[in-house]
Length: 163
Figure 1 (cartoon, rainbow, N blue to C red):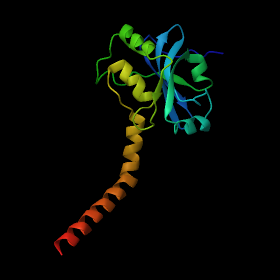
Figure 2: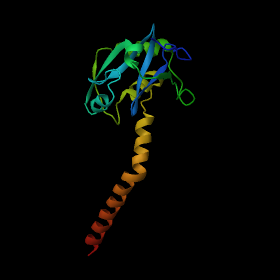
Figure 3: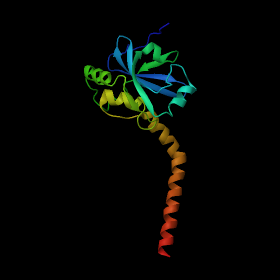
């Protein structure tokens, strides 16, 4: 049973699908279809299995029904960067997406994930806020400690060189 979403997606729209623990992104191409970057185990509703797939380094560009990709997960149109970047014309977005169909591409959770993929298609800009936000959150804790450790190492090296 397809639950209606508002607004109805238009070709070129970014679709955010709310998976447990993360968002999966796709680009709407019309007639109920989306094109998305599917890691081998990105199976609708796979939950933890799809988190594990995030660790694989290959993904396939697929065209599937939004209904099938979303499965039981909620989704919404989310063109969140339209105020920052000018979206390409819908025909160009779809053309670019369809040219990539069936291709196996490199997949990196931090730099080449499904969110980077759709932003690159819509705006010509590759970015992922969930990665940036996670890095920021980790950065405040973990990376901060790593930087302090690095600074400590640099200072101790400087002292050794001066002796």
